[in-house]
Amino acid sequence: MKTLRALRALFLLAVAVALGACSTLSPRTMTFSEADIARMLEQHSPFQRRLMEVLDVRVLHPTVRLLAGSNRLASTFDVSATERVSRTTLGGRIAIEYGLRYDDAEKAIRITQVRVNSLELDNVSPEKRAGIRNLGSLIGENMLDDAVLYRFKPSDLKNAEGRGYKPGSVTVTSRGVEVTLAPLDH
Image 1 (cartoon, one colour):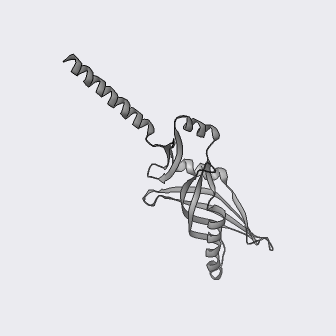
Image 2 (cartoon, rainbow, N blue to C red):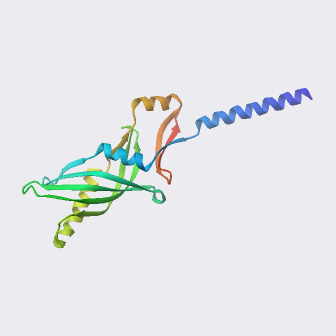
Image 3 (cartoon, one colour):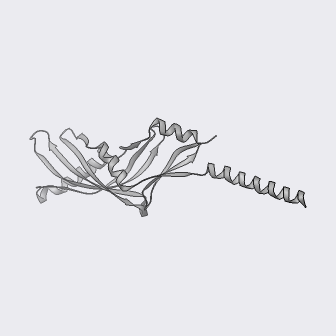
């Protein structure tokens, strides 16, 4: 009877150790809130670029909203576009939706699949508004798509790797943006 109890205890201990080992290899997540994402965007702004050698565009002051159902985010930014010849500057707002992805080579989270929902520039006549839609696409595709949102610090990556993990998939949930820390491939 003692031998049976000892074997049962040993078996339960082995199961507990095996389950513990499995749990250390299961994915974990890091969560960034809407406010965290807005701060990250703000740190990288203003996004500036010369478009078509005619316009100098600045995009700044982001807001962020989680779109968990579509695994995307929505942001609005203030926009300032200066025409280089006349030096005329127009201000306004751009609203976009986008996804996020982890770039392993750059150790960064990048904005991806930018879709411009609207671009509204102040004091623009109705006949010029059609051309503004094209400007919105240029801003989204050339300035914001593939922009770095967050770059992992080498010390953070070393710490995660020391525990057997590396960043993986990026998912937008109702709690925030979750980065899966997946087990290292050995």
